[in-house]
Image (cartoon, rainbow over all chains, first blue to last red; front, top):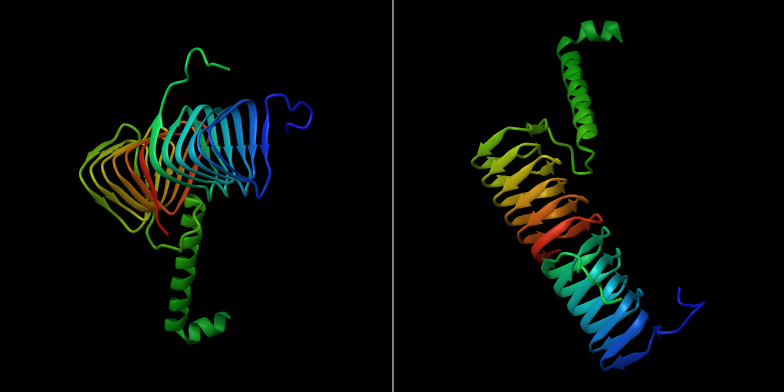
Length: 116
Length: 142
């Protein structure tokens, strides 16, 4: 995934707990627990990953959990083990069977000038 | 076999009836592609261009290619590409390819890639195919 070029990437391994606000220019791969705000170009949340707080990215792929708020500017994919709750703002959405999604869904149009 | 049939007429009639019923169930299962327990009702259909105002109640399957305004309580519902349902929908399984507006209460819902669901959904299993649009609150129950 981010093995070849880790510039601008954030990887949080399983068992790691972080709190604070994070701005990641490229890919954030979360297998641990994050407490706080997280924004990136692409966010991949592994099966053991948990984010409590506001998550915003172009592309979001969830196998773990996100609580509170999700803003996806391009595509939001919730896998079968994924769990998302709170306010969800998306442009394009896909949920695999078994995925758990609770909260208010808001669909927006793709922004004309995406910041990334 | 034949001799037995003529011997015991009533019994053979019973057998025939059972066979017929099994055939029918197999048939409707094929049409519905559903895993829900077998039903004795044939699927109902609202065809394209057909507009219906009112409440619908059925223990069977309902395919909507036309438009329904009103409350739907069915076992299994398919809303086709041209179909639309406005109002409260209660069903075991819902497969949406068209439009749904109103509150949805179901155990299993599939929202197709070009469909729009506008309203609150209460579900126990949900699948949204890429591009499907859902507006409103989602609530999971077990």
